[in-house]
Image 1: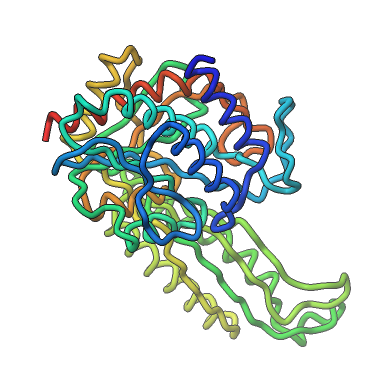
Image 2 (image 1 turned 60 degrees about the vertical axis):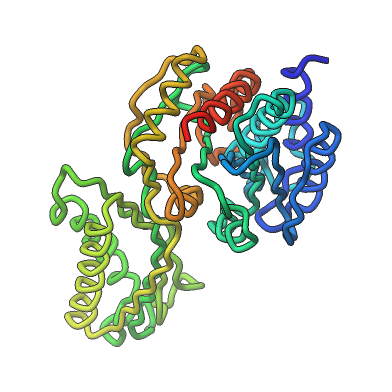
Length: 373
């Protein structure tokens, strides 16, 4: 069986048995077995899920990272290897990423004698819940590492295409919850209450003016309300309504300015309507900032590996890889997966022909990066 066939077989097995963040027990067992069957040493970190392996010898260390968790989505893709775990799906392609880095590990093992140092290979749990990177760092996975590289498949890029950029790439991610508290009343006598639904509806509209009218149009910012919940019957005005959503930015200055302005608007609205609005912010990953040198290096290796390379656009998604880049330099890259449906869609179906070329690319990248140190 060729390497390409083996990696696709592993990917399909991972796809059929997806596991949510911090529940990747069977996924971890499979990865460990596959690594050990290839003669690759596992490092003895204390991890409930996830695994770290290493190839090579010497003082210089480069790291490669894959994420291994899935999403709480019922699969709708028409493939013969559909998820067998109800309500769970690899709808972000982490099964693809894992297979790519497994392939890179096997290739690096074949070249072990010629490596100018060590390659540490991280299989990270809990990317989707934005906690797995910190778990691996606390375990010691970055100790001695000079630079780290990772990837995400990009459904909007054709097969064989590659993109990255130096500087900010993925976004700061903030989740917000507004609790709007008015006064309940009979729906036929709204004047006796304070209509939380009316207030919340107007607040949704007004919040959009923050991004469109109070931030420079050249600065990237998205503020989306994604959930409205209030009331439980047709003839009663509810006491309270909850709004939930997300703020995405690339600049910490813009991030803080928008958050402050949103809170000011909520306080003013509450005062004007004689109601109460409590605002709660929950921080996700910070902006992913690629090292300029390593991003250019990664793109140059991709070009020599046969990819059609591009300068990536700013991405407003969040990515836990950002945490590693707060500690050490490195680069995160996009590799085309040509899916008709996008990330987190129940019919997401990346072209798995990307796996073997990407595995060769990451093996080459790690080998050359060690020489570059």
